[in-house]
Each structure stands twice: as structure tokens, then as C-alpha cells.
Image 1 (cartoon, rainbow, N blue to C red):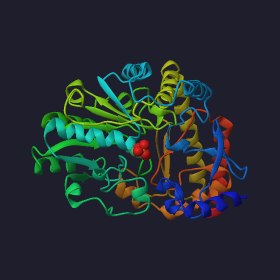
Image 2 (image 1 turned 135 degrees about the horizontal axis):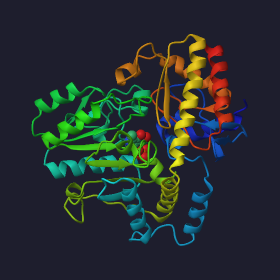
Image 3 (image 1 turned 180 degrees about the vertical axis):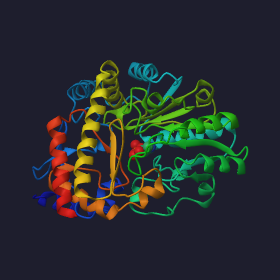
Image 4 (image 1 turned 90 degrees about the horizontal axis):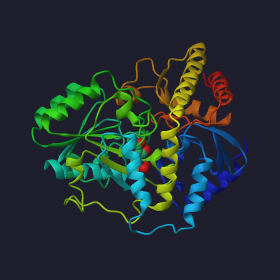
Length: 429
Ligand SMILES: Cc1ncc(COP(=O)(O)O)c(C=O)c1O
């Protein structure tokens, strides 16, 4: 595969952008090699600057649930841009968007739009602190909630990929307020809460983590968290930046039948535009300025181009629930096909999946938390990644990331992927 233009661009990029990229996991640093520079994408396919075509299992890290350049979204953006790209003042579309989200997620009373998942999670934490008057938070090892200071303690995604133990620039004071527990370990959470009575403002969790590969919550774990938080007056925050509008219309809350107090969104809610949001129970949300004194703001929050993209995509998902059963079928088909070729190859493996999130770990033991994800053979994953890339399959360049399916994938695309996996395993084992 000729990627000479990508190589040339990456060399140029490194002269003026840190590491040549505007977000670390794009750099291929852990898997080695040159990141691919893209030109365009349509449906399930990406086209790079050298004219190569790839089947996409990253989908912009989640937003493109119906595939790239989905016609209604593209058209809506084009039309809306003619009315101005920003007002910094209220628009009807923001009201429509808030009402639409509320109709899809019944336990959201109020919702505030922001411009990224990081901003959403950071704001939700501040709100929980302001509401409870307590300072500490509990997060889970290997979960990623964006790059705000409080979250860069035992974080997943790029922080795990690059094995960064402590992030320079995050003060000890901030880190001391972030307590961590292993995912799926309710006893560890109970112990932390016992040790820090009336100090913990929030438990924040990816209900189905995607930032250490895809991890499935064990039965009773999230229910247990819900109960403890209720008993102790702690705000339960579901970070649904990945799972929101992806695992179901109402996200993981709907799929797993658990109500969080606050929920954060990103990715699908913006259809590929910079959008995040946080929302939840009236009693808590009414503390946000200008209703309350918990200050939070944004010049471009509720931006009309971003809103029309998200609104168009969410409206489509709401009126076409078949998307979710289609995605589930595709994901199961892929999982079954991959399991067959992995078994035939003899390599120890674990494939975790829920809805349209799926990931592969080369592991002999179940992968249920960060420790088990880290002890998998991730060097082998890196080889697998390159072997797949060579065959035109674009997977996340790290075992600490989930794959995202789009509904643009056809059965033929999935068969091509399974065949590529078979050839890749034969090449690398
Ligand atoms: C679960 C989760 N929360 C928060 C974030 C941060 O979102 P953003 O990258 O839009 O700031 C991410 C990003 O991948 C995420 O996966």
C-alpha cells in the first residue's frame, strides 16, 4: 500500500503541530508507523490522501453511527450555514434540540449544550460538587472522561495507550480529590465511600467503558452503584459520551435500565460536529448559572451548525429505531465471524461487545477491568492492527480503544473484515 503522501504530510505536520497531530491517539505512537491522512469518506469507507480505501471501524471515535457524510446531515449543515455560523445568542434550534434529547432520554429534565465531551464531564463534576458541597469524586481505573485535570488519574484511552502514570501539570491537590476503584468492583467503591464519609460529591462512570477496549458491566455492578449513591447522597454521573444514542436511543441508561442523576454526552449527539452536553435531574441542574451559582458558559455552546447536525442525526435515530436492531445484528455477525477465525488460529482471545461497540483482546482470561485489559498481549494487538490496516481495515490503533460499527456497513463489508482478520492472524502468528 502506497502511503507516500501521508508520510510527507506527517513529516510536515511534525514541524508545526505537537507530534504532528491535534489529539494524541491519532499519532500511531504505540502501534508504530505513520498515521494515515484522510481526504474524504462516504458511508462505511474512508479515502486517504494517496487514494487508498479503508473500511472504517473508528467512525471518528463514535459519532458517525450511520456512516460518513450521511446525506440529510450534510444537506442540513449546508443550508444552515447560509443563516450565519454563530450568533452567541439564543436560537429556536437549541430549544428543539433540548426537547428532542428529553424525548429520547426520559430522565433528563434540563440539558446544557457544550462543545466537547471533556467540557460536559468537567461541568458535570463541578455541578455535583456545587450541589453536594463535597469535593471528592470516584472514577474507575481505565475509564476516560476527557482531559480535564480531575480525570487524568488512572485514565484510559490515550493515557493508558501511552502508559502515562502521572500527568505533569495536574496538581497534587486535584489528584487527591480523585479517588479510583477498579471497574466492576463494588466492594472497592463501598470501602472508599466508608473511608470518605460526607466527602464524595460524585461517582462518574462509563456505564459500558470503551476506553480500555470494550468492557461489559457485570450484573448488579451498576445497580449497586445506583443504590450506594442514593443511600449516601452522592451524585451518580453516567458518562455516555460513547454510549449515548449509540447503545439505544436512551443510551446505556435505557439499555441497562438504570437512571443516573446526571448524564454527559458527546460524539453521536453532534453527528461529527463539536458538541457535548450534560443534563439530568431538575433539582441538580437548576444549580447551573443563570438559575444557580454553579458557573458554566461557552461562546460557541449551542452553535447552530453543530446543533443542526446533531438534531438531524438524532431525529433520524428517533424515527428509525430499526437502526439499533440492525447494528446489533451486524455486531453479532462480526463477533461470530471473528470468533470463528480466532478460534481456528489457536490464539487466546477475548471479544467483548455490546450493541455496536466491540473490541478484541489477546488474552487468556476474561477482560473485565483495566488490570485484565493491561495484561492482555497488546504487542500482538499492535501487529494485528498493522496487518488489518494493510488489508484496508481501519481499526483503532490501540487495544485500549473500542471499535465502533456504523450502520453503513454491509454484510459484504463484514465478510471482508472477517477474511482480513483470518489472513492477518496467519501473517502475525
Ligand atoms: C467516555 C468519554 N468521555 C469523555 C470523552 C471526552 O470527549 P471529547 O474528546 O469530546 O472531549 C471521551 C472521548 O473519547 C470519552 O470516550
